[in-house]
Image (cartoon, rainbow, N blue to C red; front, side):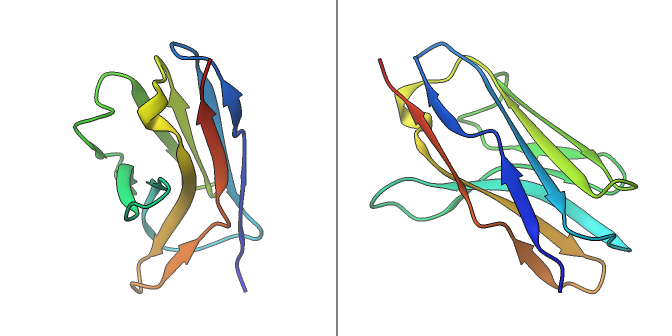
Length: 116
């Protein structure tokens, strides 16, 4: 059973930066895409950014120009560099990996809090 382990969350002031990382517990083959989602209290989980195995990226409009996703298929890792963080970015952030088979793996989530 593959597990995704996230790290890098925490408390940051508005305008600050954080970097989230996600690593698979063991080697995964045939990854279709990797990405990050977030869920704020009382809201549905939403897409933040994804990256395909070919390197194509997709971002939510709310984070374009501030967040950068990067992935390494060989190492089964995906990261999210978050800059110019705002209070509305506060949420639990989840790593997601989609295998070529279509199976979806989720991380346990990491809390990001943006507050002064």
